[in-house]
Image (cartoon, rainbow, N blue to C red; front, side, top):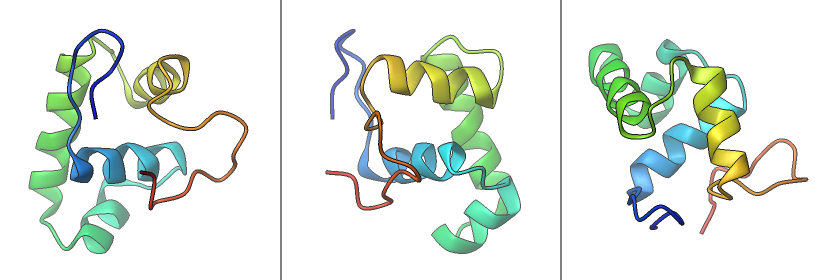
Length: 81
């Protein structure tokens, strides 16, 4: 998926963003994605840098504003297209 600003997001990154929007911790996201906690932390750091966000809350807000996550649906679906 490509954002309005031309930045692309992979399917796994979309899963991770959805999990962050649902309030998942790094540990819980790692368990559900079957990845190490370190890998998930690195992926979150990459997303923070890519979208120039300072923290997870700002990243989730950015994703809603730029329509990467569906607005008005709570909790967001993990199987987002």
